[in-house]
Image (cartoon, rainbow, N blue to C red; front, side):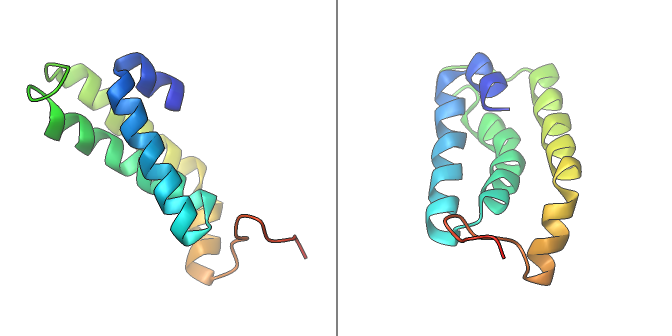
Length: 95
């Protein structure tokens, strides 16, 4: 996903990567960081369009939304573990 975002715009990719790093740093959950980053990517794209380095393109926005939905669907087991409080934190040993 990060490669696709970097292809759309390096600034967008960097913004999403920094979001992932910040969420992972504070929560220690890689899956939560990935989920929030995927959900925020289309929002970052839409909010920064015509202000920063890209013009808003509906097709790209739609692709980012679909990519976010697919990533959340792909991580559905992680979502269930997060909700149950059983997701492994970064740096924790598996039991």
